[in-house]
Length: 600
Image (cartoon, rainbow, N blue to C red; front, top):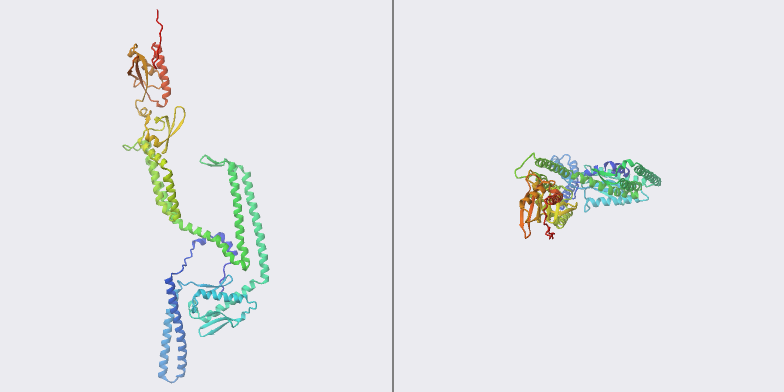
């Protein structure tokens, strides 16, 4: 039978359905090693030698049979000849069994080479003849069949078989030997050489006649008409595609409700409706161009398959599409075990993190208490553990990533690592300082602090920076490395958890003529009249200095509102002035000279 390739039209029909399915079947045939080739050649040589010996034995057998007929009536010679014939038959039988076993072994590794006419495969050659191996024989036979096909005066009756012993030649016009069948050809295929010669002769005749008919003028006219029909169908399909995408574009423009508020992710607008519409229209135009180009490209193999001269391009064009699809499909299927491993590892770490987060959340709310571990350490510690676990997870799944073992992937990883290490030195120092500050607990969000020259309330504390809002509503960002290297004053630390509070103090100077007990009373009354000053513990006064003309008195009062110091101080000074004015006592701060008029 003639083994013909599938028509490209059928290939196109099955392209969209079975393109990826074909990717799962991997061609497993590989070139054998040099040692295997050497062993195969030796085995073939042994088979050829055995076959030649079988031919010799066949001639000997024929001679003995003639002698046996001639020795009729001579009992002793008849017995000798019959014994020799039985020995030859036994040897021939054993030889055939051995040859069949050798051939069965060789078939596992031996590749057949096709004999072709144009693009049709007629049959395969597996064995060598003389100095010609199977590949050279197949090429030579294909070239000779092509010459027959190109013969303008071709006559199928000119093809015939010429037999000599067990060797059979297929010749053309008594001159051109197309194919010689002998040695192992029939044995390899399980047929006699004569049967195989007749089969090959019929195949060659039918193939040549079929090809000549397909290239007749009538067939050429049919091909031209079919190609015009394909072109008209292609134009119609392109117009339908244009119409469809135009309708899609009009639908996007007219249906404003579909665009809504644009692209919104978690209540955050990413794109406005106008920009979203423009992007969708651009995607629609690009998709239209891609679809039209794909339709044109897929129609080319169909057009090329119509004409024998361009039929060879059909498989090439289809291969350009199918090969990437098969490669991609094979890569996806081969990667599925690794992908499954990555998914399993991810979910294991995810649920471990959930358990750890639940534990530290319980610590934060006070349901779980650990001696020496403060509640406000819970979430920072969890974040540190989360980063460590994610880093460990990446180390685990890294070998399963596609291309992770390639030098390019490893080079990019090293390059990015060097960039991060060189470009993030200051960020790393701030990050380490942030970790230290977290466990030092010098302040919390909302505390009134003084860091270096900056005084204000802590509004945000991150791993890199601390943000402070001053009493003038100025937001100051202080790097954590600066916080760690400079002194920090926390005014709010003693105002919580039943602590007595922050001591506000102010110093005034009063002359020596005023009794100190009276000054104590006036300053205490002024402090108690001040807003946000605590009654308990009671305000107290300290004498801090005895100057030349005055005494320095310092009023100290407790408050729990450290963030309101400016207003408290202002109200305290107002009350001090009022109390001393009522008592008729002058405050000598700052120093000043007063010339008094003597009373008469």
